[in-house]
Length: 306
Image 1: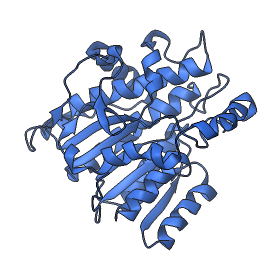
Image 2 (image 1 turned 30 degrees about the vertical axis):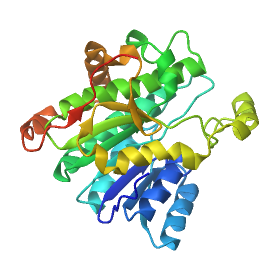
Image 3 (image 1 turned 135 degrees about the horizontal axis):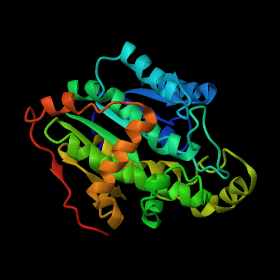
């Protein structure tokens, strides 16, 4: 992995209080980045900030529960009040919810945290990213997306809810979102990629206790470490080789084909429209379109299906 110097770069990472988010924050800060952590748990988030600052790095914490759209908006506003640039946005936070339940916004929780929060936060910070070009958006997906098909007619799974099925679907939404975002941002100097971090030993899957926590603990000896799991995210966030590459899905630090259905542009566009309605956020493309042509056109991975 290249040791890219990130001094004077600002990186925002969601879900950075544990697992690959924490490891990503620690490593990018070690390389000189000013890291901003968005975490639900204030104590755990502050512990990571303290680890970074004790080592001579720069870090700060924004406390927000990404299940709440109001708190997503608050996180964006707090970031903007303290920073005038954003070089890398890493949408890392994610959950697997054993039983269907809804958020304060009356939205199914997995959808709210794994997809709508990244969608809304990214859109709220797009203008800051554009002012900071070249800039990157990295969204953590999963190989689990390969077992899903678009379920957009009932995106909240009011019928047929299953924990792994809904989680896998949310990871497919991450890929669909990334590809649509990359297409909309072509020519702006802002790239969008998504990653599979590997099957790792982290706190993921243990938040809600019960059988999920039990089996997650049993599997730990056979999984990647969180440091290994963070490598692809770190690579996509920092490698100079990816300065102009957009619209790609990465595994083990290599661009690979994603699920065949993820290349369906009609599904990508429909998801964007549904996401706008569910977040109440208007399309920001007039601003984005105005910036087209101002930068070298990013490279795109050919839409070959896997």
